[in-house]
Amino acid sequence: MRLPRRVTGAAAVLLSGVLAAVLSLTAADPAEAGQTSLRAADPSVLRVGGTYISVQSAGGGIAVRQAPSTDALATAPARQVWSDTRNLGEVWAPEIVRDGGRYHIYFSAGRGPAHRMYVISSAAPDSGYTGETQLALPDGKWAIDGTLFTFNGQRWFVWSGWAGDTNVEQNLYIARMSSPTTPTGARYVISQPRESWERVVGNPFINEAPEAIKDPNGQLHIVYSANGSWSEQYCLADLRLRAGGDPTYVWDWYKSNGCLFGSNRGTMMSGWDPTLHVNGPGHHSFVLLDGDIATSPPAGPRFPLMFHAVAKGTPYAWENRYWYTGTFCWWGNTTYSRANVPGPNTNTGWSLKFFE
Image 1 (spheres, rainbow, N blue to C red):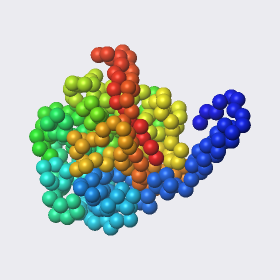
Image 2 (cartoon, helix red, strand yellow):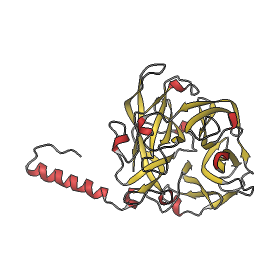
Image 3 (spheres, one colour):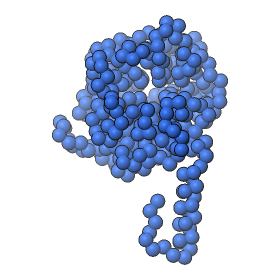
């Protein structure tokens, strides 16, 4: 908050009261800032009717919770729907998607460079899942954080992966899907961690945890996490596809000029403020009806969001991450700029504001 240089009388009393309220918020109990009791990472949540469904990696497999609100998910019973009976290795970042009346959970499993994407499916959200099938993603490289969405009648899969067989950097890739379990055609890179604000923490530098959403003009966005997840520099940034653009053509995507949701002012996009209560917010989930980007919210009101973060005042470490509830809204007339690449240097449209 910036106070005028000269404020006297009643106005001074009012402003001092507002400032005190703001300062009290910064010292609020973490629960007041949306912290749930679930000490975990990588939330994935969708809404079906009045029920909120989440999925997480737990107990050497995958667990599903159901609750009447996002706040209640953390205390809802966790039902194991899949176990790693084949000893695939680390199970990371499951994503639950609803497509064609069935639930599909995409997850990465493996050890080190062996991580690949797998899928299980069921007619019910918390039981009856098939055995795991490895997705035959184009080029067959290391892959994590994948999710399915439909845009303009075409299914797409977007994920974080390597260009080759070594961990030089994590890029975002997209590929067409002919069904919820069948990739088709080539993979295309749509983002690389090449901007200074997404290279604060790295080795490797990282773009990961992509989530699709459609703005009020019908344009596609991929909101992703940048900087190392082991650091409080972890944050959310945005890719906006130009109107009428080709999702497979990297230069039809425009990147936000900084983090849109993060805890360090130095990396934030101009006009966006850092968080008050948490450090390193990232790996989020837009809580959409049926998980369908066709149900993306209109301009105006705030809508539910879940993300993981570490409470301020707590050492930043993976084991200190909690699920948080928050909100987001569309923010119009926002210009993303770039230089020395094909196509126009600027693109103006909807961006997003995130709230703890």
